Length: 176
Image (cartoon, rainbow, N blue to C red):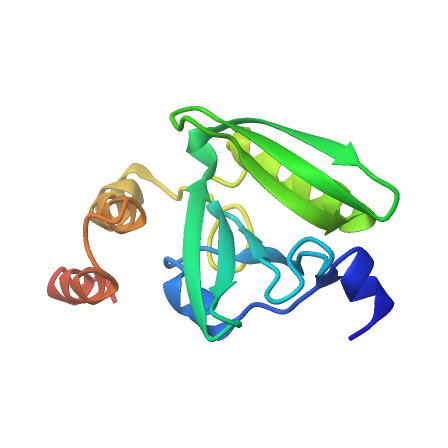
């Protein structure tokens, strides 16, 4: 365990359980673990994607984890409170009684993360494909073909259907 991970947190790769819960076309832009000074036994891991902010919180000496996600369309603003070693990212939520605080994030990383979140709030990631590049619509005929898939993706993203249901419907519609 390094002094950096204790005082300011560290960047981390995307965990397998996070990769498994991503919707098709969703990309993880950043992963960071809180400084251990905030939660010594099991600091939160935060993943910033093209669709949402995912907070993975360990419980019971890190053997169990809870995962919460916050969609950009539920957010209205993001600010940073910068400290000496680390920062707190404050996210104003539109429809929740509480705001989201991402505490003990390395200062350098906090600036990048808040910028990505602000872009998500501004809707700049809408229409991004699996390669992280803006998907251009080809024609009205192509739009008509893509409409069922878009509806299906939206229903999956809202949690109305499971991943298995999503894949089955996609196969049924011949959209593989």
